[in-house]
Image (cartoon, rainbow, N blue to C red):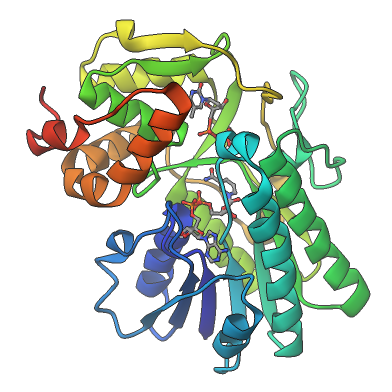
Length: 349
Ligand code: NAD
Ligand code: TYD
């Protein structure tokens, strides 16, 4: 199969490319990525030499570029490319609407014209908004996004639905919970805790820290996407959850324990505006139809993730340090300068 992956230089997309190349030797992948702050070719260093993977730098909003890519006998698309961080969307939502809504519309249009046989849209559980205590969202739950990020993803999600209803374009939509694992940009909570704890820097916990997220190890998300790409039903939505619900402060404590760092690093800061209290999904549909279940226990996934960041200091230095530091300057008005030095020492400071 000839596959286009958008956003394959980012966190989940790069893990998915690794997964596909290992699992399906005859497949080839065209990876279309703009290389924004969160995408980087160092993330793909281990697949760079694989002839089955071709990197194309380009914007999903650039119709001509997308047409070029889709004119090469592509059979299927797995669409990850997005602006992905809620806090950034609160600071400025323009890029979110452009990439997530208009970029997706451009991809859908060109893919339809090119006669693509399958289009998997990687949406998110955040389109449902906050889950009341004791309840889990099903695929039929109403969409009620609360952040500009979630609203822009809901826009893409609904456009994809409309392309199926209107044109019978073969779209499948996935809504997954919070991912964690290797290669995640350290503005997101888990790698942020790890990198800041390694530096001995305070860890900002928003509000009371009792917001709940359901954490899925990134490879479990990739196996679900693989199953959906091959066996999902056109026009359907699939929730993908892991049943690992933990309050944020508990996640932070566990990571500090794994790193042997003190809890005194936890610093409760002003809450995120519009902060969703809880995300929780019912993913029985994916289990029943696709036989998919997440297989990584949270303790194991968290340990693997912490170990990965400890032994990939060079990746952090090259990929993340610059953008991460300037982001932190903006967010907290402080200069972050020590990450590279500390990782040079294997995180032992
Ligand atoms: P990420 O920010 O790590 O990666 C996004 C990638 O998209 C980057 O490589 C970036 O360069 C690329 N990109 C951004 N704008 C682009 C554009 N206009 N044209 C081409 N490429 C562009 O994000 P991620 O965490 O890997 O998320 C991937 C997808 O999964 C997103 O659609 C996100 O909404 C969705 N998702 C993420 C999570 C999560 O927990 N991270 C959970 C559910 C769904
Ligand atoms: P994040 O990784 O940004 O994912 P999302 O907002 O998409 O769920 O955040 C996960 C949770 O961690 C969320 O409840 C916000 C919280 N959080 C903090 O408490 N401090 C932080 O510095 C960050 C980035 C997030």
